[in-house]
Length: 357
Image (cartoon, rainbow, N blue to C red):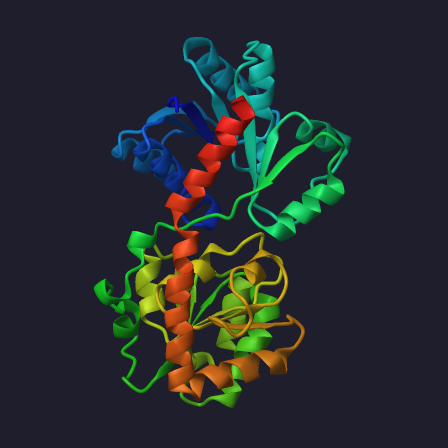
């Protein structure tokens, strides 16, 4: 099959979230398959520097709204000077510039793709109109159903699960650096959690700490001032450890015995796949894209977000049964292979080719 010329567009300054990692890893896999990949990025940012360090070709875009004139101009200039088969946008503010640039430059042979990374529906007539003219990649069945309910007839949609760079998540080759950093004892039971929806999930964390006196919780991500204040005023503050923004998430998971992710509106939840790849039993909310990653009881448990006691019970099952914990962790390692970015990239290439006819 012919090699494609692909422009990946993402208006993000840093590589700290699942969407940014997804975009960079997709670009890597596409290039590995022989495709010609260019990235549209904000100049002078961490993301831009990382792309240039890997010798990706780049074009400049800037922050701004969905109709940012400079971004339309930059992509239009690129299309006038270069052959391009696929323009693939990843954030809401990236959606319109490639489509408008395609129309302005009469690049009828190019196809515009957008990956829908959020669970909520788009808003407004212009959005319905927009999605009739692009190829939408939905990152989960939940997102696909939302877009089906929203979209006008004739909209082109495909569900492709995101992937992780599996080679970066090898338990035997990873140091438990946060366990070492916080001087945890060998007998401490460490639960890894994320900062998302912290005000809602903190109630769950406190109930777990109340139930298990030997449990400690490590939290990845940047907390807001009011969220830090919640921890400081908690009677369990000495057992809650803030790790901040983490570049090597494998070390975070390796420092824990279990991964707790009660985020109820995830489009997908790459962190769940990452934790599974590191051999951790997982406990997640029973709604959203994250709930699609594993069957309840196979690699962990899924609990209704409003059932605080249910989360405590799920943690108890895993914590108090080492054999069960080991089985769930091993099953997670095996299942995580389905979420390798190489699998995602292969599905994406297939979608690209199908759109080109």
